[in-house]
Length: 297
Image 1 (cartoon, rainbow, N blue to C red):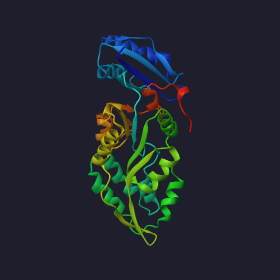
Image 2: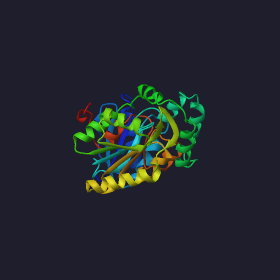
Image 3: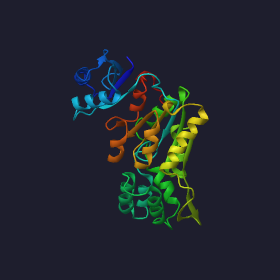
Image 4: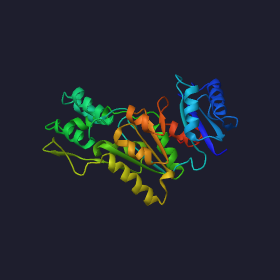
């Protein structure tokens, strides 16, 4: 079989009936299938298939499982395990938008979060929106950065994703439209090889309201994906990119496996793969890793 459909649900939520329904839907669409193979009991399973495209398999299975908390990723079976991971940070590797949380210490969280939401859904130019939001924080004590960091939480599965891919030789990079204060700490905590982001400018213990040029935005994320793939001597088909916002969409669409993770509507609609229910371990299941192969950092 030259293709595989991976079904993933929150732990304990993937029922055999859901797998059977997905398999029947593929058969009805003209596919030949093999018996399912569990990657993690009641959590993730592979359905190998042939005879239809991944897009057709995805559409058929989604129709069959509509309303169920099951994520579906259809792709070629060959080359599933990727050699480069590029991950967004905010609302992807961490659960929050760190700029919004930082704004809370200036009494501006709701106001700035509203701008963030529009920018992440592609309604505003990312760079202009970033400058606007940072400008509103002029005069905020830099102590707020540490206080924001202390309240920041990792997305479930983040450590396992990076540790497992590192253990099998993949390069792992955090590429964020956020700020180096946070990306450096997240990269060290999770185990990324490197991090790329923006720099908040400060003077006399306060934020100046400015961000250093050039701003790392949508184009820069795509450029970083291409540059790191070239440095590794691999094609884009051997890369995995994950994010949730409009500034992630170009790199998601360019990667061999591009995943919209709990993403904004415009991103989820345009991405070839999306994860809406499971945690970041889903990206390992999508690559064919079994739960017992996961490295727990």
